Image (cartoon, rainbow, N blue to C red; front, side):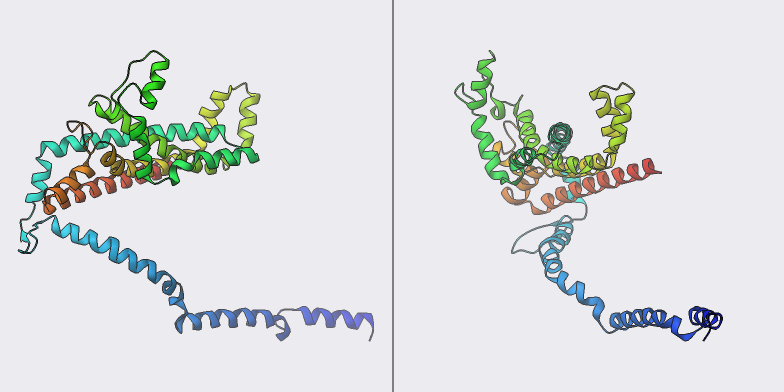
Length: 326
């Protein structure tokens, strides 16, 4: 066969329409059809089978109790006597209570202070510990320890440090600079700030780790350009780092705000709402109403109101994020 005859033959073999050129296409179609048949034959439920144990636990220990609490909020709960439907009377009792309004205000103040303080301190720690050094890895792990320590242990440690006498740990440090001993959690004027400081100390390392992850997405070229333009280190942080972490700050704000609104353990262990109700928050009030005073319906109504407030806050922040991104 001559070369002139071989070239048309080769072009004919490679031309579209020849059966040999559609083998891979038929294979792809066959695999697609096989996957579709597998889904129809029951393979689609395999992931749900693995998720089933966790979903059952969530259903039994979270969603069913939430539904029961919602029902109880409209009832006068009387154990062994049968519940009595009272409508919105429990909500009226909660909203008209001066103690609840005061506890709600304390909760907002504590949540705002802990959110702002933990985010600010977390940003400072993240900027100080940014890098790839092995020593920095050890320091990050050490700084993250307050997050993994149980909150009951943290509260007990801070309660010891807040000892109101001059021999207390923090009062001894204050004495070195000439300040008198403080009552800390035993003084109505400083008890809220003391609990806030404890929450910031525990929450800042968590925010630090998320901010460190967000710093990797900030364009390093912007730092170089700002440095060439004569921007100082503070100006580079304010005009480059902070705008680059806007989405991270939004997520942290939601998480920290929810954590602050649901604060309970540290308040319960440090002050139990005292002294003189100066640190009473919604969660401790709900605990006292529901379990100590046996007013389960009123306590459930307070819990539902707290859930609604948290939900509204989350939705508002998400809407603001979407509006800024457009």
